[in-house]
Amino acid sequence: MAESECAACKELRDRETRAHAAWTSFLYRNKNKPKLSERANRKQQKEKMEAYEQAHKARLAHAKTCPICLSNL
Image (spheres, rainbow, N blue to C red):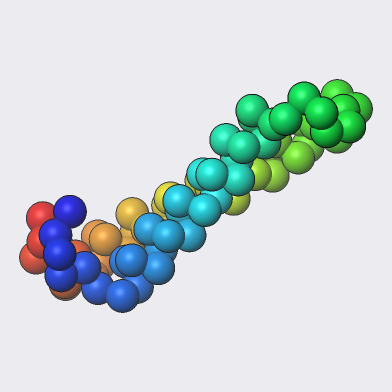
């Protein structure tokens, strides 16, 4: 990406990265942790996936409307 990203885009990209890390760490969680029930497991995985999707969509929406981000494409 370009070096002159706007601050909002950088913040949104960081948010997306954190949400993705939380989601993938949940998928590959340490086997020493107590196991969740199947229902709780699915619910928690869905919440983390939705948080990542929201962060990703927010970053994409910002990139489409921000003049700084558009000029870097």
